[in-house]
Image (cartoon, rainbow, N blue to C red; front, top):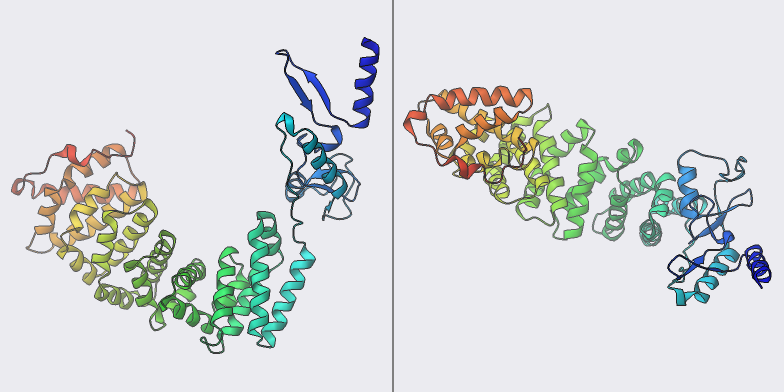
Length: 444
């Protein structure tokens, strides 16, 4: 009886059938047939694909293997003639049948995977987009862009394939081509191209060249100024991509009519945290760029950027807080900016509160702004800002900062601030220092 049972189990193994074994607790355990397991992970395959060597793997595992720079079969070590694995529908169907047969054991049927896009399919669609652009066929281009966007959003694997085959460059060129004509006539295709491009960031140099053309940038500003929320969000993301590495684009953007006003409006009437952070980053690049920054800062100050930033800082997340303080620090390099900050009742309470509260970066920016404002007051007879800083606990906060530690530049500014504040301490009683340390984030 024992011999026949053993023979039956051995025969079942050879045929790749289900094996049922009892563990120490007497519970039945299922053994996945060997042919259904991926040779890399030894797990049940969900999307079996076959390489040119004839060995079948799970798609996710073999693609990670190839992306890591391996061009041989993991099992046979043979050089792969093709890096495009072929779906093995026969094995996948057998695995699905096996799952259905054993659903009583809690095995769920693996879904039929969608066949991922190939490089050839992507190249074909991009070629058709190029032809549609040359013919100024907006409707045809729109349909193709929607198709490439749908493929890219289907899976991370598809997105990598679409991006690696030059979709960013092709779509940027298409955006430039249709932006040369009437914005109103091509608004649908331009909007969809821009929406698709945001999925494919960061762009390469060639793609940024097309998106950074004069006509394309004017279209981005037009979108940024329009009432459609999606357009405004995508437009500011496009501008952030352009100014991230190219100072020439920063200068071109800041000189375009309506650009600074549209960016200001996006902070004043926020759409989402992502667009707010992008707007702040673009403005930061504009006001810290080397050429004609004084004129840009003056325009922003006249728009009311100082009070807007301070109101934003009262209750904002870390990313927005860091970028808003960075912009305010740049604004306070100008006489107009410092004057507006000194006249605002929120300046001292907000800046002192941000020290040692949010992040190291917010601390650095806050100390830098305080230093600029108090240095200004030191040279004048009016010391109201210094007294206000003392009143909200700046002296004790800065002392604590030096004890906790900070970067050298911030340390120097904090030390100089303490000297300035110390000259006026006898004129004002400080608030309870413990109020300032309740939410201290940095460990001692």
